[in-house]
Image (cartoon, rainbow, N blue to C red):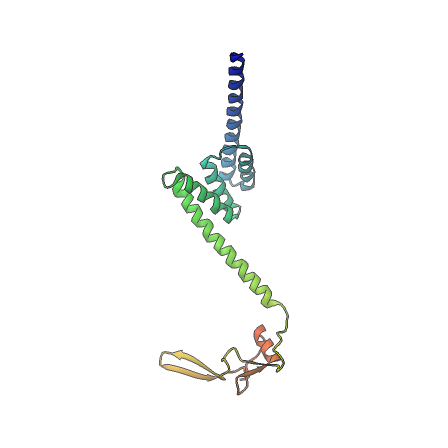
Length: 189
């Protein structure tokens, strides 16, 4: 009876080792595809390993993070590279590379977010809309702040110029204001 149980346990261990070996082959295959520039295929391999392994090896965190950079999934890249750095610190085999790829991902993520914000702003500003100026139909000129004078600091002192957009009292009509906001109001002089 003990012999049969021992053989069963040994068989189970062998099956687990075989499964782990196959998963490590998938990981190696993912690294190969990443190295030759087939990042989508590498991503599939890495995700397969992640879905089927009990304990994620630290090198998988590095490879998945690096490959995510190439797929322009910068947030995911940062997260996985950060996980590798947390696991291995500065002594890991890929620690220096992980930090470098993480920095690249952070730069790209910030650039993508800035571009996104600029596009949203452009979309809002490019709409053909009219701003309601209230019951008077007039607003204080945003160019001169209602002073009817624009003051520019110069090397030889201040330069005073009459505001080319508003009336003598620093006021714009609602129509003029909406044209100004759209960049379509021509200066009066």
